[in-house]
Length: 327
Image (cartoon, rainbow, N blue to C red; front, side, top):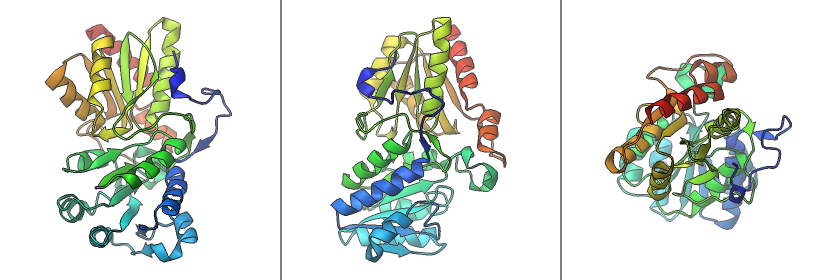
């Protein structure tokens, strides 16, 4: 059943549930963070409105820098500004940051442990018609491998706003992953959120599904559907990929004995891989992973692509039944 302590919206599965992209949550969140901390600055690569950084630019024009189409320069500039006590947020499409400027992020930001926040917008195949070249489905793997990096994937607008405010307080490199398409806002201002802590949204005893980003809502829909077959599913929102909440995840593994992971990312190297590593080293149990299976994306409507790559509720249900047979 839904965990009351999660304080989710009352019309969780209603047709009129409000929807906004997670990038909007970042846009509103970075303005609030800027009001609290005058050292926060924002740098962008000619994608000011797409990344919602125009809101910060309007409020703090003297703290906004348009770098142009030069993600490598943006990362190096931000690292330098951080050594002068500024708190830079650098934003672009995830395909270009951390995609194009990965070496600069590694060497100038992570190696020196500078206080830079990397914002990757338009991640996942749900970018849709922009096609494979703009669909970042490798960015979690790229960032979680970097020492000192915190990696956060918010599940909706409300959580993206909270995550932006929280990473602004952390001293050190952080990556936040955002989507372009509007998705249901199913958490509220009262829903608990803390970097490094996974949240149990639904309790259950038969199997645990661990998800991040937009797929958390798909997982909740799948769990509700399985109620009809008396399959009791626990759902965990694992918004922080690094550091993992080992305590909550291992406890869930011991209680249910079977795991599903779900993410809008390559199966290789993403959140599912991180959890496989955790379980293999501590408490091996049957596990199935939902994600893109070693392929590039392609052009299409977001809902078409999510279905094509097996990232929707029916595929999650199929994976649950498969893992239960292995339990």
